[in-house]
Amino acid sequence: MSVEIVSGEEYTVTYNDSTESLTFDGSMRLRTSEEYEPINELMQQALSSTPEGNLLTMDFSSLKFLNSSGINIISRFVIAARKQGTVPLKVVGNQDIYWQQKSLTNLQRLWSSVQIEIQ
Image (tube, rainbow, N blue to C red; front, side, top):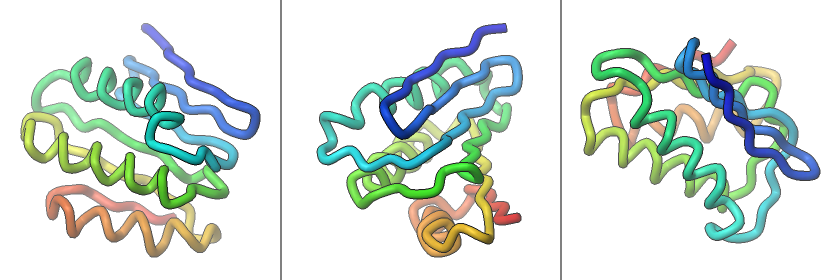
């Protein structure tokens, strides 16, 4: 089992290879794509480490805020996963956090196979 963590002042992103999941927590207000690069690298690592055919879960249910730069990084990641085509994605959100209802469901427009679960 391996757990990788990227964190900043207000956020933590954790990749757990035994559960094949990325967990996002806190508030992500980074300004540029460059500032999101460590998170992007962690997501890419998760994608490449997940065995072909296994589901990679992205859990946003504890992420209170994600700005447009962060949504852009997540969207580009979904497109990269679609192009790779070997690892399906499941996105988990929290119905009580408004931005998640709108933004996370839009990920299905980028890849219709993304499973969206807003609880």
